Amino acid sequence: MKISIDEIKFIKELYPRFELDNETVNAYRNAIDKLPPITISRNKILIDGYHRLTAYRLEGRKEIEAKIFDSENEDEIFIEAIKANTKHGKQLSIKEKRNLAKDLYKKMVRLNGASKVKQQDIANILSVSQGTISHWLSDVIEKEKEAEAQEILELYLNCYSQGEIAEKKGLSEATITNKLREAIFNFIKSYKIKDLVSNLQFYNVWRTFGLNEKQLKFPGQLPYDLVENIIYYFTDDPVIEPNLKLSKVVDPMAGSGVVRDVCRNLYRRYLLYDIEPKREDIPIEKNDILKGFPERARGADLVFLDPPYYNLMDNDYPDNEFTESYESFKESMGIVFDNCKEILKRNGKIALILKPMNEKLFDGEWLDMSFDCANIAIKKGYKIIKRISAPLSTQQFNASDVERAKKSKKLLNIHRDIIIFEKI
Ligand SMILES: C[S@@+](CC[C@H](N)C(=O)[O-])C[C@H]1O[C@@H](n2cnc3c(N)ncnc32)[C@H](O)[C@@H]1O
Image (cartoon, rainbow, N blue to C red; front, top):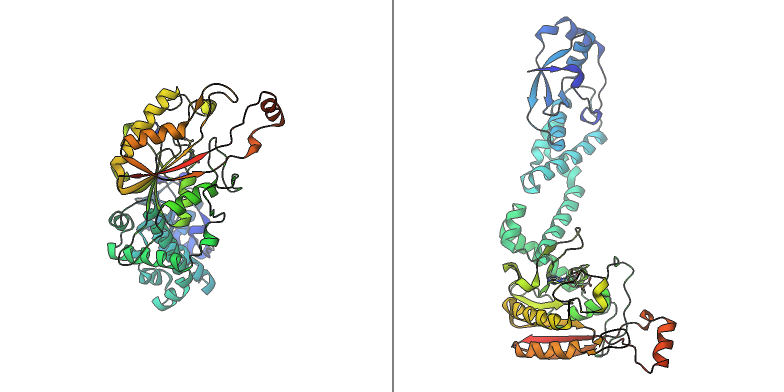
């Protein structure tokens, strides 16, 4: 196919150790109509034939015969160009070959997955032995293996089955199981509660937790340490013998996704949903809890419930069935308890976080969400197995709030309940 010479792009990295050889160009100019076609990619990047192209340019030609390498993928173009260009030009140094071997390997892995890369292919391209390639790549392969093991663990923690991961990674299910066992075994071996749960609580009145400095700021977000204590106390620790077993936590109103961070740290599996996912960097699936759960959520050990409330939260979230009125809040919670029953295992638990409060900051009706929700849950077939007081910081009130409260003989509310239910 004839291609306009001006459209052809030359990328230096595709020509390691390239130096123009004038003698070759002159010889080509003398045989200009007998030269084989150059090779370019679909997006007109020159893959092979720089001397021929130069000869054509110097002869004042506008077009050149070119074979098209049918790809626009940068990695594929790189590999194809290196294959063609290491054969001519100046001899590459050992260091250059070693770096190229690593580049080729990484690109081949990216294209086809580590299991499909043959070191012999790289050895052939660079004209060295397979043993040399194996030696050069040992650290890259080690890192690659670690990254792969981490990726497998991440997928498993995000509730992908071992079969699904095997398919995704192009590996056997047995390999996936082994890698998971190893990762979880290492975790268990180095497991020290004290280091793991930084602010472990020992009584059922918890200290006031602030937002952790690593947490991104989202309205209505729970402190990491509070979530960590809940997950630690109300799910089982990982087990590998006789079978792999990690607790499964489902958060249907995930907000900022703090539950995910905790679950990854404690090696619990997690699934996050929200009617309006607020982050794209972590897996939060769009789902309306009032309509039920996706199939994947079945088999939960713990459902983490941190719903938006009627009144004070009005400003943070658009009005919906939870925030419209106290009646609609309670009605919605009834639906939530029903839907949770569908996905919870036998004896599965719900951790419900609530803040009973007055309708207004000081006045209005006392809305005892904890009491009311507990009654609803009991009617729906749950029992309460623990109640924890997790107070809010007094810092949410300013001096004038306190002054006003004193004058009007009102108590300011910093009470927050965590109620743990078990499905009967
Ligand atoms: C109090 S926030 C949760 C905060 C979260 N625990 C955190 O620490 O970031 C309540 C969340 O419920 C979500 N939500 C409201 N109605 C919902 C519904 N019907 N289904 C699912 N999520 C809903 C809101 O979008 C909001 O992100």
